[in-house]
Amino acid sequence: MSELHPGSMLSEYLKFNNWSYRELADRTGLPMQVIIAVCNEQSPVTPEIALVLEKAFDRPASFWLNMQAWHDLEAARGL
Image (cartoon, rainbow, N blue to C red; front, side, top):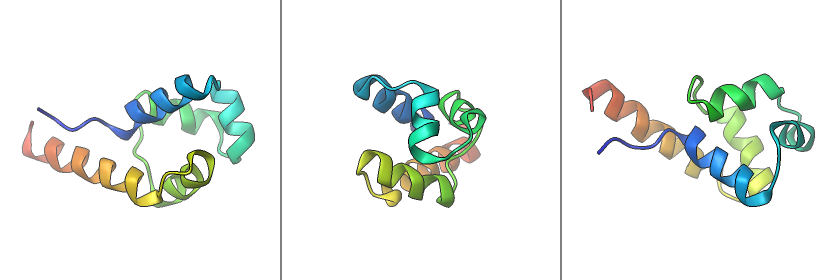
């Protein structure tokens, strides 16, 4: 089973908080296009994005980065 892209988790957090992409962009200062790209699994969660998400969702940056690392590792293995 391949690891989920952190964008899947980010999408779930948005649903749980009843936030739109725009609301998260307004709360974090991230461009809405970046949020959409991450949620659609088209872009990775970078350390900079992880730090912003840490503040927005009270989840450590390492949570987001570890999820990204596992996803990347399994993608490299072809899983």
